[in-house]
Structure formats: C-alpha cells, structure tokens
Length: 358
Image (tube, rainbow, N blue to C red; front, side, top):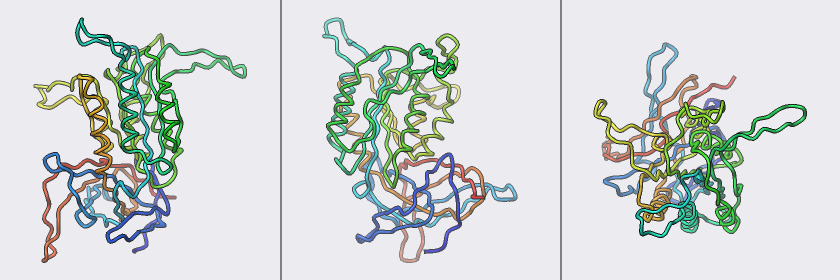
C-alpha cells in the first residue's frame, strides 16, 4: 500500500484510524492512516445491485493551486458490506402538537400518531439491530416556550428542541423503554436545530460504525421567520445542519408524513424541503406518506436500504485545502482493461471540506 500524505478532514468527513474493512475472499484490509469513508447504495430499476470492490470508481473534484478545477480518480483501498460492520442507529420522532390524536374520517376512532411512530420504530430495531454489536439512541423533538433560569448569577435561556429518551446502548430492552417514554405532543417543529443536535450525539460513537439517523415528522420545518417571542425556533441553516451530519458521517433516512412538495412549474423541478435535502445530501432517502397505515412498511424499507449499503474507503491523492466534490461510478473492466460504466441510481455523500494538516 502506498504511503499517504498526512491529512486532516473537517466539516464533512470524520476520521477513523485502524479501521477494518472486509475485502474479497474473506481478507481484511487494516489501514493505519487517515482515510475518507464513503457509504454507497446502488440500484437498477429499484433493485439493489450486488457489487464488488472492483465495480466502483471514485473521483474527487477540487480546485488546484492555480484555481483550476481538477478531477482526480482515487484508489479504492477498502470495501465491506453491512453484514461485517457495526451500526449506530438513532431514531428521532417529532412530538410537536400535530403528532397527537388524529382521524381520517368522522366515523374513525381517534388514533395517536406518536404511538404509531413508536411501534414502527420498534419494528425497525427488531428487524435490523444486532444486540451487543450495534448501538441505538432514541429521542424526540419539539419546540416550546424557552425556560428562563438563573445559574451562578447568570440569566440563561434554555431552548427545548431535542430530548434524548435513551442514550447510546447495545441493549434492545433499553431502546424499547426509551421509545415508550415518547408520550408528549405539543409545541412547534424545529427540524433543523433538532437534527443538528442529533448529529452531535454521534461524537460519542468511536470506530468504523455505519452511522444512521431516522428522522420522522408530520410537518414541514419551521421557517427562519418563525419565533416564540424574540427566540427563533430554528437557529441553524440547512447548510450548517448538513455539514454537521456529514462531519459525523451520518446517513439520514427521513420520513415526512405529508405530501411531497409540488412541481415548481417555473423552474421545472420539485422544491426540496428540509427532509428531502437532509436525506439526499447524506446518501439516505426521503419517504413521503400521508396514509399512516403504511408507516410500518416505510420503516421496513429503511431496514432493507441499510442492508444494501456498500462501504468504500480511499486516501485522497491531494492535500490541497478546500471543498471537494465526490463522484462515483459503477461498472466493470473487460479483458482489455477497458471500463464499462453501468447505469444505476447511486446514493452517497456529495462531498466534504478538506483541510490540510499544519
């Protein structure tokens, strides 16, 4: 293996040392240098592709010292699949006022959205969580009037958005207990600030874990103008939230219990809301559904998507500081060493900011 430059990644890509990746033929690649880790899902007409390390090619695009954009292919150093890597799975559920009782018709007995969300989340952990190997976290989010407290002679304003009901644990019973503690339904919907705080909890996870966050909300994110008194419901921009997620290598699957934003006729494209952007920019997927009887099915799909993840790693060939865009292709090489790309739907992190070490 070639000797890599000493590098430091900030903002988008977390660093792990001595990470182990299962390679072809049962071999294991152990890397004692700092690398980029990339989670890729590949589909052809909705069907997951079963690929090997040699089926992937990765490029980075960045500006060189002369300010010109370069596209440099990277050497894939490691490869593994979900089965051989532990997972850190965090589920956070919107518990704002609209997540209380609901009916779809006058004759229907009122049902509790929170109860449906808790049950569907439990089914996800049941289907994919490997006790003692994986780690799970459960939380809820909402915004209500800030609390004012005096501490050490200082007046503090405490904003309530993300509340952890069960911190990281390898124990399923503790996860179930945490889900059962999500009972309230009140306040507004601060998706950006809550997910930003959720991303920071992944700091507590060390090692080469697959980091996954499932975010469920029945309402769109509170806009920048939304306030309670003089306090903004969301203080972080969408760009800041995405950077924080990518900094901790968190892949987001978002569940929006409302209709997908309509086609914008003027611009000829869908208006991406917060839930859609969080998923797309981190390599996950956004699900939109208004029929709550299908909620468990969505969680089952997310479990299937997690099993489809391919783990790739590479050492950047350049130490130039700046924004990097990642490009991935899948295909195969023929006997003449010619590459034949394959049309596929690829989901992966879009890029990162590379900072050279002093």
